Amino acid sequence: MSSNLSKPYGLLAEFHTAADIFEAAMRCRDAGFTKWDVYTPFPIHGMDEAMGLRKSPVGWFTFCGGFTGFFTGMTMIWYMNQFDYPLVVGGKPLFTPLFAFPVSYEMTILLSAFGTLFGMFFLNQLPRFHNPLFKNDRFKKSTDDRFFICIEAGDPRFGLEKTRAFLTEECHASVVESVED
Amino acid sequence: MALAAVASSVGALSVLGADAGHAASAPAADHAHEHVSAFSLKQVAHSYLTAYMFCLSLCVGSLFFTLAHHLFDAGWSASIRRVTETLASLLHPWMLILSLPIIGFAWTGNLHAWFRIDPATDHALDVKKVLFNPKAFTVMVPLLIFLLGSMARSIRAWSVAQDKDGAALWTTKSRKLAAGGIFFFAIGTTLLCFLLMKSLQHQFFSTMYGVYYFAGSVWTTLITLYLLTMWLAQPGRPLEKVYFKRQQQDLGVLFFAFTVFYAYIHFSQYFLIWNAAIPEETFWYVLREVGSWKWVGMTILFGHFFVPFLILLNQDIKRNLAVMVPVGLWSWLMHYIDVTYNVMPVIHPEGLHLTLWDPLFWFGMSALLGRLFWSEYRKNPPYPLKDPRLLEAIVHHEVSAPAASAASAAH
Image 1 (cartoon, rainbow over the protein chains, first blue to last red):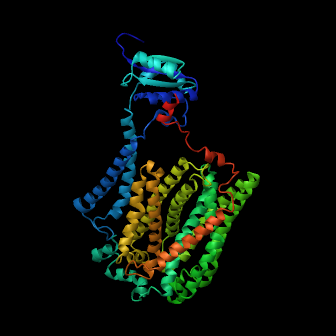
Image 2: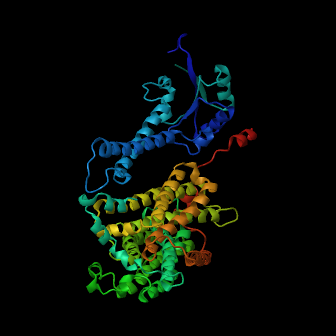
Image 3: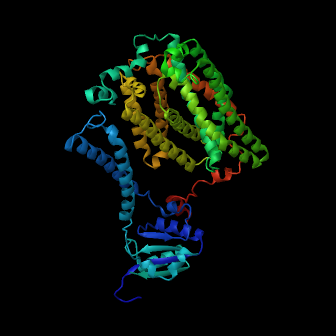
């Protein structure tokens, strides 16, 4: 559905084999593209390195979640047992990290999991109901027997004709199509 | 942490009132006034036992790793299995021979107090005398080590036989032995550490003690294995072509997992005893909160758990030798301190008291076993040559794309 009003989302390049796309991914990486991705029907070993992907920052969200959980648990029990409603139970002190530990530990796990899940959502800009690539009929084969690279128009190095030439000539893509937003 | 405080602070409400608190520390009182001089046999015996328990950890930990490899039909660990097979095989005869002085020390009244106590006069001993009696000790300790060692030797013998003919039959045999053997391993290791270490204070109860020793043992073994295999995989050494970063990462991850598991187990033991506050159990930790033992406990809490835990949280650290080598050396020290924490308060209730015997036996025994390990390891191929899973171990690393500079240089 192309009209003059729609702006390009990016260029979609199709490949026939894992080896081809592996090679092409390395060329895209070396050309310095930043807003691009690889779509394959199955995981390809070594693709992370071929794409030059850095380590996921999700771990930091996990860590912050866990850290918050631990201290929330401790503070909650201190507040309830020592501060808000002091009550001696089983001859134990009003507060000690010892009996607060199991709960804090569970809170650590809970909020770590939340941090991981929501951190991943946040970084991937999810939830999102639609992706312009879904409109492309050819792209449906990415779950079957074709391999795709999409370089997005938002990439600072993107130029419609320049990038098309790069994908066709240097990356040896079989088909290069423009995808509209 | 707070056991002594619990006992004294809550007064009349406490199940551990002031009197109960004194009664609770009674088992330790036998030794309270007895000064153990640095050159007494008692000191030598306890230092020897500490070193022995440290070394035994590496052997049982390696046996566990070997059994687990076969139980899970694992692939990635095939190329480093000869190392654990050899370490575990040190149990028989070497650890068996090294256990004989312990039996001697016990019989001469220098180690386990109950060797000289009449069960009729000691209820705690009377109910446990089936296990804790000199004859049972003398038979069971060598027998258990012999059986565990024989299991390790059989698996290694089958693995070496496979090096010659490549038959899958040997793997199947090992897997079957591992399936039953893991139960014997659990019971045997528990009994061993009950007899050798826990019964130093025979009044103590803890069903978690076996798994506590196990957790610390596997923890130490994993980092030892990590360092050893890294050394063996250096250029020109035997594992160079079969050991890769991915396996290094996996060992690091397992070590990290056991850092947490150990803390979980040891905290649980402490926490349950603290919470129940039964004098037959609390005395053990009350004794370990006296004098500098309190700080040894804190060292275990932070040094055995928090520090390694926080360092190892980062994924890439597990491949960083500049960090992992110091962490490894630190872990050995921590496990040694952990064993010391179990053994030494019995003769030094006033606080940590190191003598020359401690490093002497620790380094001496480790060096001796290290030497024996090396000569045994070199007798056989350095990794299972024809193991059906060896290929999996070798390709278990990520196919690495050429780095940016190399790729651009190519075109």
